Amino acid sequence: MAQLSSLLKYVDVLDSGAVLLGRVYEVDGFGKRLVRVITHAHYDHIVGLNESIIHASAIVATQATIDLLLELGYVRGKYRTIFKNKAVPLPYNRDVEFMNERIRLVPSRHIIGACQVLVETNNYRIGYTGDFKLGDGTEIMSDLDVLVIESTYGDPRYRRPFKDDIEELFVDQVLDLLRRGPVIIYGYHGKLQEAMRILRKYGITEPFIMPERIYRVTRIAEKHGYNIGEYYSLRTNKGYMIKNSGRYIMFQHMSRAKYRRLNGEQYHIILSGWEFNDPIKKLDPYSWLVALSDHADFDELVEYVEQAKPRLVVVEAGRQGEPYKLAAELRRKGFRTIVLPGPRVVDEMFE
Image 1: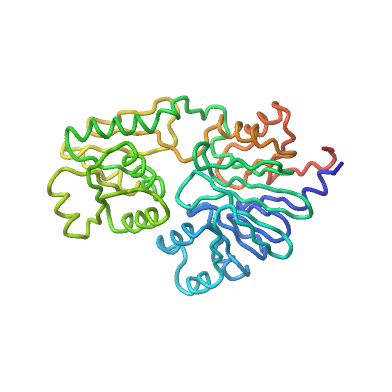
Image 2: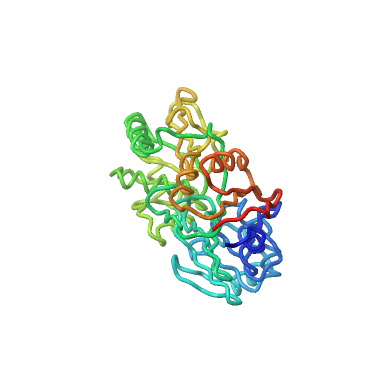
């Protein structure tokens, strides 16, 4: 028998979003620990990175995440050289130890290079999902004393009944629009490259064109295993010629969606995870929203816990999400669950 009070010495979530695992590791936030771990290169998971670069002795991430952080300019100036010296690129499912605490990066389906984190300390196994969605590419951790789980879509309202069909529906929409003219797809870094991968998987062969920054991120994606095929920067002569040909798919950052031209010369697809009623929604005569998400919906969050069967669930409440509704559902299903940051229950016992 082990008391929760003993186990909770090795797990915490700070208001900043930092997830503290063991005695050594801070994940996705700054917590004055020896080792900073980064699950993926989205802005809300690199909060406090400059502080960690100065304070920590090592910064652990997949090589793809390290490449993205440098390419996207998240590490600049004097911090860049220090980061390169402290970065420890760790392949999936390879263990490394810092001060007798073992860490492993576990595969996760989210964006390029995303991972989960497994820490073994004092005979406890503690896992943190980071952001994920279920399916090929996400390995469910097992035999855990504690599972720390994200809660972005932790409200029962956030269910996508069409999630198993969304890729084919997305491809069909693109094919339909290509018959009318060129297509521009808007999204965030990582999701854009996932969209490219899906289109190629389903046999779409039109050339892809994109701004230089998206092109550089796409090169990283291809370097780390994505099959992107024919793609060009708009800065190149080839990209310019393809754009003038009128037969292409262009990829733009989400920030450009509000400036799209509704004149019938191009057709627009906006990728969003915040749509739960319809897989595809027409916004205007020339624009459609496609509910292509890189996050687990409510049912997937619950399913992960049911498959992992941890002895204790900690629902992360340090960043955007619905932790209390997810925790309530997990308790209803019989899982010992707490929300952190929040009251730390220490008097229950578990086997």
